[in-house]
Length: 177
Figure 1 (cartoon, helix red, strand yellow):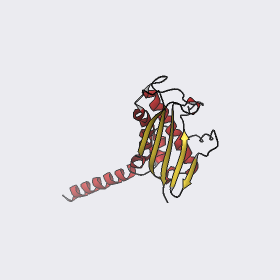
Figure 2 (cartoon, helix red, strand yellow):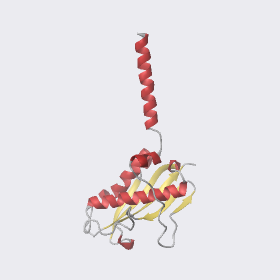
Figure 3 (cartoon, helix red, strand yellow):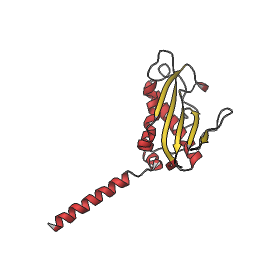
Figure 4 (cartoon, helix red, strand yellow):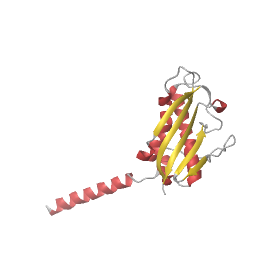
């Protein structure tokens, strides 16, 4: 009986330890597990900066989808590309914004919460699936930051975006003190 109690106690302790290890907040380890390697963020294309900090909030300027091989994903979602391709463009935009965060903060563990996302989709007036497109951005934020990545969001259609990019997303992030 003593052996059974010890065995149960040991199993429970090991389970708690395993859970604690999997619940460790490490966004950069999650990126690595997803096979995502962050590159230096692109320089602003006009007269603005990539991010501005005010108190414990970081406001990220709108960014578009950069292709890994260079250049942007361009075109109108629903006309030139499918919703699925738009989703992937939004996911690429999230990777760009993560690179901005990393450059600004040095360590993504400093992110306390993704607060607000504004996703803009380059589309025609009759396109109505902006939320499905911007999910590509939101889904990656949740995959990287877990519960801290869940955010308030707007997903809107635009008749045009700079340089004909498929999507543009800006973000507000709360930082650890």
